[in-house]
Amino acid sequence: MKTDDPRASAPVSMELDLKDVLASWRERFELAKDEIYLDGNSLGPMPNSVPAALETTLRSHWQNHLIRSWNDHGWIDLPITIGEKIAPLLGAAPGQVICTDSTSINLFKALHVAMQIQGWKGSILSEADNFPTDLYMAENLRAAAPEGSVVFDVVAHDDLIDAIDETVAVLLLSHVNFRTGALHDLADLTARAHRMGALVIWDLSHSAGVMRLDLDANQVDFAVGCGYKFLNGGPGAPGYIYVAQRHQNRARQPLWGWMGHAEPFEFSGRYEPAPGIKRYLTGTPAILSMVALDAALAIFEDLDLSVVRQKSMDLGDYLKDLIAESGLPLELLSPEDAETRGSQVSFTHEQAYGVVQAMIELGVIGDFRAPNIVRFGLNPLINSFQDIERAVAFLARVFERDLHLQARFDERKRVT
Ligand SMILES: Cc1ncc(COP(=O)(O)O)c(C=O)c1O
Image 1 (cartoon, rainbow, N blue to C red):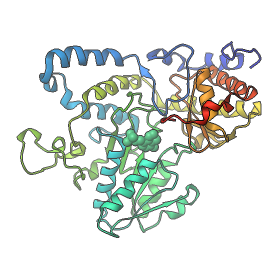
Image 2: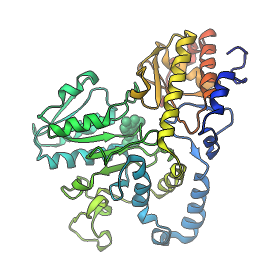
Image 3: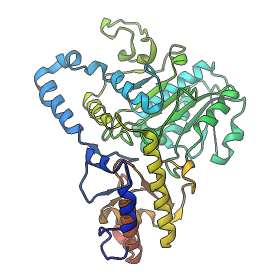
């Protein structure tokens, strides 16, 4: 911050970077050298294993081998093979995760199945501040069910524990809050819900890939998540669903597509669900997106997620402390304590949209969340401590020069 160019060397952070055991991981991604990318929680960067995998699929498999590739190049098995690569990131034994559809759709399946298991008795409980698609899907289930048969309640974050009582059939929560970054205690809330007789669905979109998860050990019932955030699967990458073995055959998921049939190529006129996790499939998998995600997951092969989590917490602390020390007019929205924060740090500011846009023009990519949130996602595999120090220096520049107040930021782009 002492020189005029925030990209100039930053000694304190340089020392931290020298001790960083994940420092070399950035080389495994296609990223411009100077890019300060603090948005891996929205769209992960592209691992350098991805273009070649797509090129092979396009030029060799699709172009030359055509439909034979469904068998010969394992296309038909990709939902399972990718699910098995995601499983260790979730702390799940084999046979419980499948890669398919989007998080929204998988949520609907999980909600429906959980309510079937509960005999459609009791309510669905969520947090008022949950990601909108989670709320819409629960509301959608309520609206589609016969009048009055499904009750959907939401409560504020602070009222959650007390609201988990015997009237709750299904607890639906995001592990990390997309606005504040607050991290729920998955073990504790799952155990409490179970004591009350409820089943639990976790949306892991913002936690899978940046921290250790232990779904089996905590006896989680269902979980879903996105492939395009910290799993780096590319724009619109398919999501995944985890269904604990003990629940898999207890109900039929609500979207009876042919890919979830026990024998899809018998083309039977009657739906007979496949046994196990395969019944959570619906239609034909999007192979190009799946190939990208499959290749991206190689990043995690020799990675210790506890090390990733530690760096994520350190980066977050560094960012929040630097901003506090520099007296910038940004109010911390995320928890102070790294243990209760996911891999993002959010702040509020009246002109948050302008702040984010001005930063993007300076080469620091974060995102804006309405109405007033400046959100910085931290990906320990690509972000250095120097990135953080430089980002804060750029923020200082934005405020010194009132760059966030420029009239062109009055109009918001469609994607913020
Ligand atoms: C917590 C959470 N759930 C779900 C989604 C989106 O789901 P989908 O991939 O179906 O659009 C997001 C997107 O940012 C999210 O943050």
